[in-house]
Image (cartoon, rainbow, N blue to C red; front, side, top):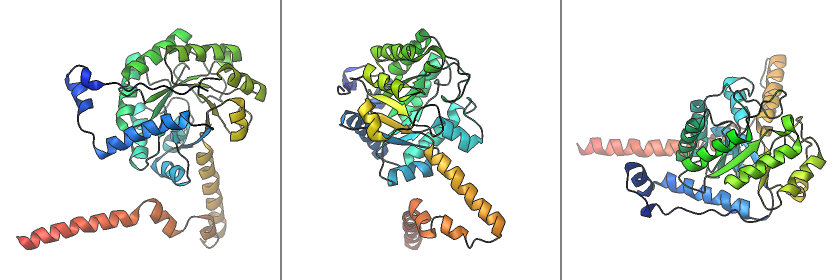
Amino acid sequence: MSKLVITVLNFSSMCHCEECEAVTTKQSPRQEVNVDRKQKLVDLINRPGILIVPGAYDALTARLVERAGFETVFATGAGISNAHLGLADVSLLTFDELLRVVTRMIEVTKIPLIVDADTGFGGPLNIQRTVRELERAGVSAIMLEDQLFPKRCGHFPGKKIATTAEMLARLSAALDARVDKRTLIIARTDARATDGLQAAIDRVHRYFELGADIGFIEAPLSVEEMRAIGAAFKRKPMVINMVEGGKTPLLSAAELERLGFKIMFCANTVLRAMIKSVSDVLKVLKQDASQARVQEMICTWEDRQSLVETDRLLNLGARYDQIAANESAAD
């Protein structure tokens, strides 16, 4: 696979309108972290080996992914819809709802965040706003797909697909909108379900030709189809989505790498682990009317407080309380 070539723009040679001046001003520590993680994702994609990317649906699960040692996290649209709305992935999640969750994920992690932006939440101008807002929040990659609105989970039946021309317009809008070319654009097609594998492959070739950084054919139906995808894009980074119980056979990361894939999404493994573990705990609590057995099924008090940085926050609060006390004494 060839390296992902990213050209960093020289903003100093551009115009000096208010928007461009904002880009050239000194960055805050948080902005510097966001730039660092953008470059980190580029480096991870250029590095040999496959990248395993679990999905997260809120700030806490994003932090858990990071603490487990994964180098990148995926903000799953289906998972966020399931967890925050209690509803299926059928385009009910709004962009503002997604952005709030994504912003919180970024605030509590330092690893790159890939965001599922569905169809971009509207037409080309809406897509441009989506890209700008997500980039401003600090995401490292944005995934856009070619379903028609209302879209649905890629492993659901009844998907409807936009024309190739319409998707190229969507991608053009996204590519024009991003400020930093290290904000990677992932072009996803769901055309396998409607038009067959070759049509899906042809679409992704067109998406790469336009300038997409990473390709993604959702829901291939067999190992043979997965092998064909890898063979068709030997010099391009491709995503494969491993959905337990979905349409695509589950393979290990090593097997997927041999087939030619670069990024392995485990989009909703974390969410489904939560559903099962919480259901099991509630079942025991209901049966026993006691927490005796439950204690063995949940994390410790100490683990919980460590995860949410209780000591750091209490110490920080105490520091400011002391400043206030000192100022009052001085008065």
